Amino acid sequence: MSLTDIIQLLQRLEVLIIIAAAIVVVLTIAVALRKRRGNGKRLSVSEKELDSIKVVSGLEEAVKEEPAPPEEHAEGLSDEEISKLETRVIESLMIRGALRPLPIPGSKEGGHYPELAGVSEKDAQRVIRGLIEKGLVIEAEREFSAVACPICGSCIQVAFISCKNCGSFRIEEMRYYRHICGYIGPESSFKTKLGLICPNCGGTENIETYHKKYRCPDCGAEFEEPNIAFRCGSCGSLYDEQTMEIKPFKRIESSREMLAEYEKVSSAINKQIELLKQMGYDIERPASLVGESGVVHKFDAAAKRGDEIIAVVSSFGEPLTQVLVRLGVARSDLKLSRIILVTSDRPTTTERKFARSLGIEIVEAT
Ligand SMILES: [Zn+2]
Ligand SMILES: [Zn+2]
Ligand SMILES: [Zn+2]
Image (cartoon, protein in one colour):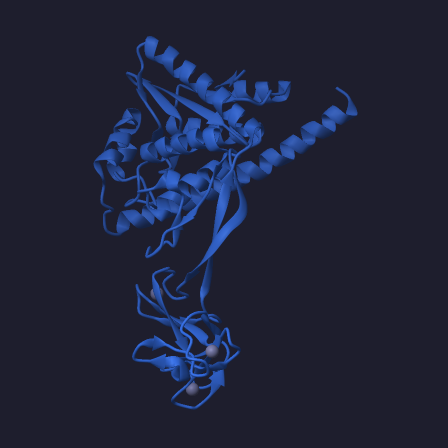
C-alpha cells in the first residue's frame, strides 16, 4: 500500500465518520419525532400508505405502534405517482432537451411547465427537485418572472394606476393628439359627435396620439407615468411595485450524458427486477419501507418472497461511498436480506469490499 493509498483511505474514513454521525443524528431526531407524534393525535392514513406498510411484514411490531409513515406531503401525490412523473419528464427531455415554463394568465401559480400540466405546483416542484438531487437535470436561466402577492404568493391580481403624489386611485389619463397638418392639441379639442376631427383643418384621417399624461383630481398633480398598484385576487392585499414579490420561472435542462446515464441505469434496474420476478418474487415499485427506527427508506423496488425482502436501488449523482453508508443503515434498520445497488459509477476495490461487508451487491450499469 503506497502513501497516497493510505491518505486516500484516511480521507475516506473521515468522510465515513462524518456521514455516520449525521445519520445517527437524523435517526435520533426521527425517533424523537415519532414518539412525539405517537402522543399527539393520529395522522390520517391513506390506502396507499397502508399498502406500503404491508411490505414490512417482518416488522409488524414496529408497524402496530405507528401505522402511518410520517410523510410530510400526505395530501400530495404518492411516491409511485411522483416516480411516474419523473419518467414522463425524462422522456420529454429526451425529445425536447428542456422544460420551458409558460405563463398561465389568471392562475395563482402564474406559470407552469406544460409537461407537468394538471400536477399541483407543490408536486411539480417535488418532481423537479428530485431530478435535480439525482443529478439528472439542472435549473437553467430564467424564462420570465411573474408579479406575485407579497402576503400569500398568489399571481392573481388586478393592476390599478394610482397618483404618485397622494396615492389616489382616481387619476385620469389625458391624451394629446397630433394631426398630419401639424396641429397638436388635447383630446377634448379633437372630440366631436362625429368622432375625432382636427380643429385646425377639419381633417379626420391620420390623427395620432402624440403624448399621454396623467392627472390626479384629488391633489391636482400631473405626471407622465402613474404608479402601478395591485389588488391580490386571492387574499385581497394591496401592494405596489416596491412591495410586490417577483416569482422567477426557470428553464429545466438536461444534458445528453445525464440522460444516457439514466437510460443505462434504468435498463439495468429493469433487468434486475425481471430476474427477481422470474425467481418468484413479488415486486413493489417504487417502494417505501418503514424501518424499526420509524424512518421511511425509499427504493426503486422491493422484491418480496415470504419473509425475505430484497431492495433494488439506483444511484445518480451521489458519491458511491455515501450511498453505501446510507444503504448500510437502511439494511439493518429494515432487516433486509439483500440490497442490489445499480450504478453507472465504477466502484473502487475499497468500495467493493465495503459494499460486501454491508451485504450490498453492486451492479454496474453498462
Ligand atoms: Zn393625487
Ligand atoms: Zn389638421
Ligand atoms: Zn395575496
